[in-house]
Amino acid sequence: MALSVSPLSQMPATDCNTPLLTDPSYSNFTVSVLLFLGILISYLPQHHRIITRQTSEGISPLFLLLGVTSGTCALANIWMLGWGVVECCATDLGPFQCFAGMLGILQVTAQWSCFMIILLLFLIYFPLATPVLPTSDNLSTSSHHHKDPSPTTALTISLLSFIHLVVTLAVSVYLYRTASQSVVVKWTAFLGVQSTILASIQYIPQIFTTYKLKAVGSLSIPMMCLQTPGSFIWAISLATREGTDWSSWLVYCVTGTLQGSLLVMAITFERRRKMEERDAALFADPEEEEDTFVHEAEVSGRRQHPHERTRLLADEDRDF
Picture 1: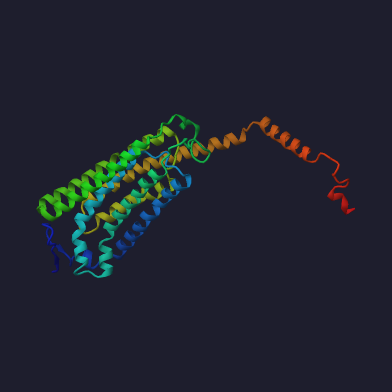
Picture 2: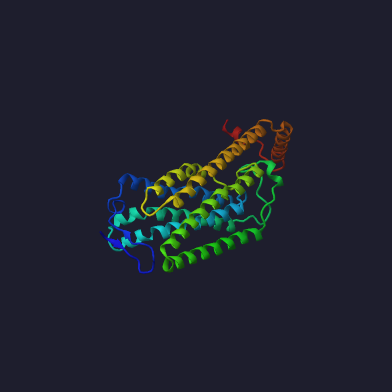
């Protein structure tokens, strides 16, 4: 039996010969790879929407803060629980076995990285000038009374996210290298519970913001369409992996449920906006259209007013 013992940790040795590592399921591997790619692809519509709209308006700062801190806890949790698999990669596992065993860690890391990019785009495209809302591309007129977050709020949530990241990683590394097994297990469980709690309330401020705006804003509906079912598939995939427990996958069941609620609300408001635009186009003011026609006719008449250099025959008459 090959055991991977870390000289820097008090955690028990990882059995590198467990069937989950030496003989990974090809079906589970395929699902895990698709999930990994799906995580990366699902965030692209959100990144693209913020960049193309040139504003992060409509996204709740508190939603980002809770999402980043929840992701940081999940990141530290999965790396501490799965570090034994990483050590097995250096001693007993082949490239394919190592990649298959680390897919759970890579999935969580990819998810955290993509959400951090949203926070970065939120700061880069933070609306400092006149709000974009409402526009025909995004929001209804009912969002006029929404008060945008201040630049101080945006900088504060960014600073808090960075401090939380540094403290969480520092404590995790210190405990993993010095603390007993029971302490490390309790810490990873605490990280899992903290991640679940933060994720459970993460979508509440965004749901409130979207409901108050009565519009989607810079949120991406395609992203939520991909991530809502993907969260439950991801949870199942993590639950069947070596080195994980309920604290690693419960958070994704919670976020999938709440994100689904936000998705339903966003689709409802987007459909309402399109109906309002269609009704506005059907009942456009005919007098305004008539004034436009008269104005164009007057301009055309002025252009065709004869003068001393005007040709006596029009171009179309010269063919005869």
